[in-house]
Length: 56
Image (cartoon, rainbow, N blue to C red; front, top):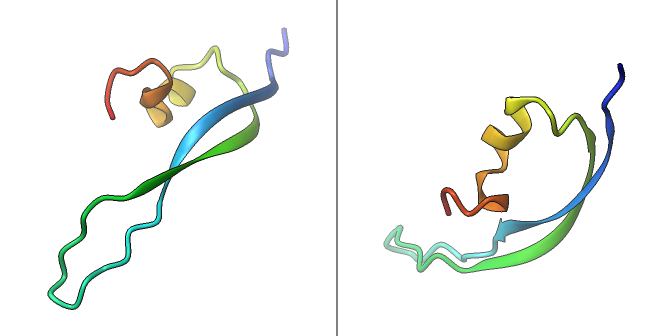
């Protein structure tokens, strides 16, 4: 059985400018991502834990 399809979800993109002293304030922007992958496998969920709000 072939279980691959299009998955559409929000992902965070880091847009934080790095300051001269090397610190960042952690600014993120959400963007829509379309991936053609197998969501049944654990690899997908390990790569995108924020979908289930398990980890930020």
